[in-house]
Every structure is written in structure tokens, then in C-alpha cells.
Length: 302
Image (cartoon, rainbow, N blue to C red; front, side, top):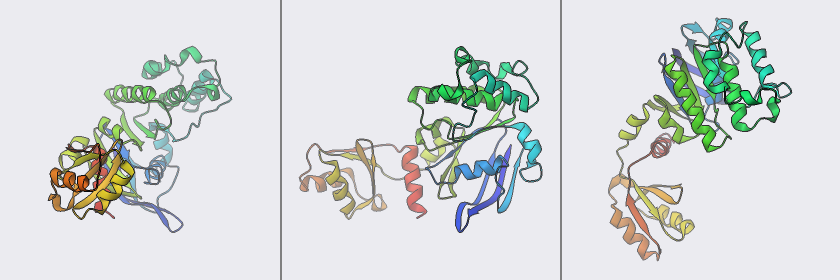
């Protein structure tokens, strides 16, 4: 279990994480979701005993991140945001090195990494620096697991890898969770939030909300519209200048729009835009996504 109580950390006068409190349950797959600068990496580095918080308390399986840092490093596997293995060592040499650091062997814990490592084993004599992004990711995860950790902390592990590798990686995390490992993962990708048991939505060093992805979406009570026209650049300007518009954000080929006090109906937006001579117009009632929840929380906390 991971317990975070009123953690605060600043760099100079700039707060990186501000009064954050979270609980990650044993065996849970928990996501920190937010853009760059949200404070995800700072919080993870505190949990990994690589940074000392200015205020607050954090424990992993009852061990204090400051007082018990040596014990914590024995029970936690860590994947930092950047590839941090030895590029001039081969795949096999990297894995053997990390096993040795933790006074174990690859053979002793091979069962834990088998499903992951078999995908890169054909390249075991290749230098790590010569691997593709997806293969580097699998090697880094294998190295993080080789000492059989109780907790796995992954800082944006799928950033910069292709969609297929992202899907495979999350399937691997689900299998690891089934083995009883507690997993804390950060990501800027909102679609990955739905793959977690619970998530904390973060922005500017603060937690905006914590719940299951399903509950977060269910608690979104606004009327939401998807609107598009042949001239999307002019559309967003016209929508945002409409007196009944509360918010309008670009989502792919559409704008996601809410009305002030939810009083504006789809027909009102449509009639207003037709008067503005928009062609190819579509105005649809839609259910919210986790991205819509996040954007609404940002507005509420500005």
C-alpha cells in the first residue's frame, strides 16, 4: 500500500506538488493522470526516495520514504520517464547487472518476467541503445521486476512509443497486477486512465479529483455537445463568442461544448451557427469522456 499525506515540494518559489494526499491500495493499478508539469514525476521521485519532500509524510507498505529509504529500494521496482539503462550493454548484460545489484539472479525470478522477456530474448545480444522504443520499454520493465518487487512505480512508461506497443504494455501491467503487485503509473494520455482501477487527475501540482474512471464520468452532470462545421477555425471563434456558451474545446474533428447553466439546447447552437453562415454543420448530444471530466475540473479550479 502507498500512503501520501499532505506532501508538498517546491523548487525555489515554484511549488511542484502542493498538499497532495492519496491512498493506493494493495494490489491496485492506480494512475496519476495529467499533462507535463502536473507534478507526477516529482511525486514519484519522492516515493522512490530520490527526492525529499518539504512537508508531509509518505509511506510504502508502512515504510517511511525518508527514514526507511534503503528498505524501500528493496521492495520497489522503478521505471523513470527516460530510458535509463546502459545503452552500451546488451539486453542480457543489463538484465544480469540489475539482478546482481539486488543480489539475485535472472534464473531465480525468471517466472515473473517470462511473458515480457520472451519478446526481447531473440535480441539478447543486441546493445540496449540499438533497440526500438517498444523493446527498450520491455527491457526496462524486465529490469524493474527482476528483484521481485512488491510495488511497481512507472513514470510515463508509454510516452513516445507506438500504439501497438502501448496496448501490449498495458496488457503486461494487467498480468502483473494479477500476481499481486501494486502498480502506480503516470501518463499524460487520458485514454489510458480507463485502464486503471482508480486515477488521480492532476494539474499544476494539485490533485483535482480521485475516483474510478467510471465514477468520474458518471459524476459529470453537464449537457455536452459535439459540434463541427466546414470551417473549424471560425467555428471555435463563433462558439466562444456566443453568449450562451460556457466552454468550448477542440476534441479531434469536433468541438466539445457546454452551455451556461446547461440552458442552451442543441437547436439553439445550431440556429446560432446557421445565422453565422456555417456549412457542413453537425450538432450532436454526446456522453462525456474522461477528457471532458478533466477539462471541466480545470475550469472549476482556475
